[in-house]
Image (cartoon, rainbow, N blue to C red; front, side):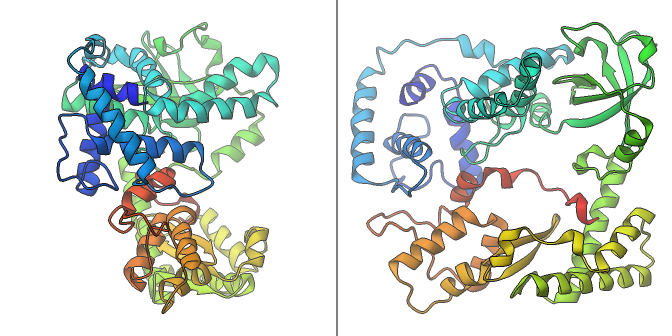
Length: 476
């Protein structure tokens, strides 16, 4: 990793500089944890090297908390800095990446760009040390159940999200976002790269095959029509005209004016009853809808939030046990339904049926078994998203945040709960509401300011929580 950092600097590749620019925008500093008075963004830095050493240790030994400013790490970083600085003048430089990272902005660059994103997430010196390992573990787990004839396709499907949307512990950047920062491309093309993670996945019916350059598909759940490039079906025969009205499972992505198949295309010979059930099932990703429908969904979520706040009087509600939680949730649903009727909010028949089912006992919506042993059950309404449920929030967070004199052990437990275990948005609410007096980095000898670096730490420990926010579809 340190060798890659050095090559990045000497060849002006731009991967590290993109990371520190992103950090500067997010946090107001290029790297967390350290005193940066002498930091030079255009040169190698001891702080950069110390951060990379800390990250390598933390990723490989995650069972404990490591001090980023431990003397061992700082001494190693200083020694590495001195060795690398002496080698700068003699270090070879390459222009390979200047061409490799160039994206001209042509529609037919989709598959070459996808290959570059695949390399970036699994073989570049930063993401490759993390996402490639994670991907290999996922494939190894899957291989235990895959049939031999499925292996190639299942590996391809497993790898697909890593090139686009799987977030890293580097400030929760994914490959597409990071590559967009280093790409030699226009602002419009960079933005198009950033949008690639929003794939449209699901079951599609084939509507028309007569156009020479495109197929016409309809998404079975949303009824949206997509003109998909014929030449994005690579390595296989064209879809025959006789397949009209057939059902296909696939993933498509939008790139500079065209939809492209990206992943595996599977013909699904489902009976009509199963097709109907899928059409009526819940859409998981709000972005599958067009802008008008998405605006309606966001309006509906705002109504849900208003009802929640009006009923409970607070964004966070804590219940003693599951029975109390279920009773309160049933009353909330009744209140919300009555409120909607008074405000003439139109509900679909499916939504009305779901509300009735939930109100009449909630037996199908009980909590996981571990919640029945919880000290308390909290409901938190995250604005723009929906309700989140957590256990032990009062016992493991609020009580310790407000304790008059917590022990060192309690301070460590509070840090781990607030930074590692809890949803970052709820953690932020608790710190804003109950104060930060007892929140510290758990290693007493360290000078790390956990409160200053909290946003980085959340992105490091819970990168998946930092996707763009959409309403939870299950509550609307």
